[in-house]
Length: 249
Image 1 (cartoon, rainbow, N blue to C red):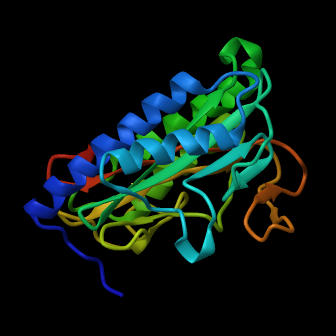
Image 2 (tube, rainbow, N blue to C red; image 1 turned 45 degrees about the vertical axis):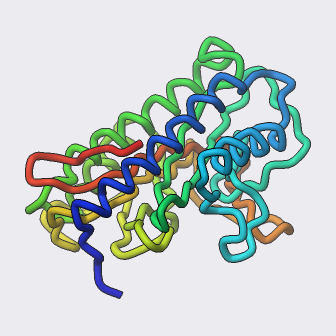
Image 3 (cartoon, rainbow, N blue to C red; image 1 turned 90 degrees about the vertical axis):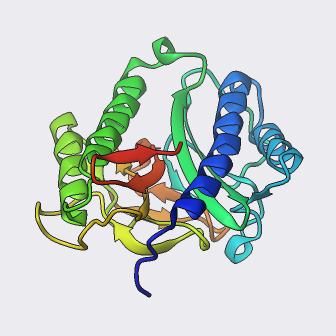
């Protein structure tokens, strides 16, 4: 499948969808606290999305049963929200997608439950992954290539002493939740797909604090690190322009 370049009208609709997703993220951040369950977060997110006359992108996608992907500590991606209560010092990653006017937006953030001071080691890890994300976004400029994004991300991650989970990537998005191209979190400068104005990308470092090898649990969704050490995910979605990467959310 070729990369779909988005029109100004499509981009305007995506900005509207992104505003809904930003509201979801803001509401979740305010709600996250020790004792809150993952299902409570999922219900909150779904209610906000549907009240805005939008749809949760993830719910029903390839059979996924929830609005959010929620990952605690050693969980890497695709965690199903359940009745587990958050604990002080947990590293929680939250991924969410919104479908509005038939177009998707998709973003993720991480947080230390109860505040960074509850686990400074995890806080440093999350901050490094976020720094890597922003470094990758700076390279998402028309005329650059996919490898420029991945190289920028990997440099920050390696400098922090962490490892990229190479089988999980960012992606294009739009009428489908996952479109071409794959946005790798590693790479060589000047290689890969040419970035063009109007390309919509979800840039998404998915990182292990230790061994990047992973396995999928018996629910057939939740991916965890094999060594049981922490993982972390941050994600921005936006559009490539001649002057830079416009972050939607």
